[in-house]
Image 1 (cartoon, rainbow, N blue to C red):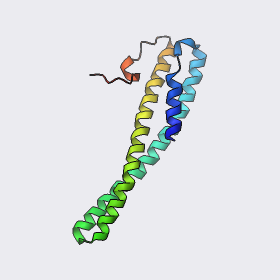
Image 2: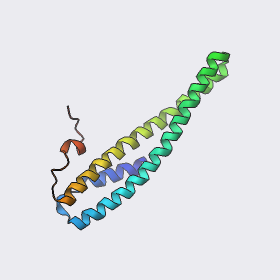
Image 3: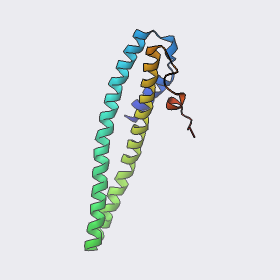
Image 4: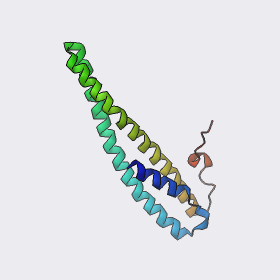
Amino acid sequence: MERRLKNYLAFLAGINFSNFSREDITLMKEECRVQIGFFQHERLAHLIVTVGFAILALLSMIIFFVSSSPLFILLMGLFVILLIPYVRHYYVLENGVQTIYAYYDRMAAAESGDLRVVPKELYSKKKVR
């Protein structure tokens, strides 16, 4: 899914919205809404799994402190090791979807005929101070 997200973001980055008619931009907006839905679903699924692993890691830590059994510290370590890739993947999904929102706003502005409606900071990769 990460590869699909990166490919879609690269596709959106290559679009010059001023070269398209309003009807074309309306179709692109609809497709963008569909893609946002896919990525939001994936993001929700990974959020649930990530929170689940975090809860299991905390429970393992609490049980370790109560029982002092080394088995639970190993279990907590396993959950934390599994949690790291989930947090990373969720981070990539979250940032990607936020970037797609900015492109959607650009499409809406282009559809209305005014590309200045959305500030450039929203879709720029540069950080604003």
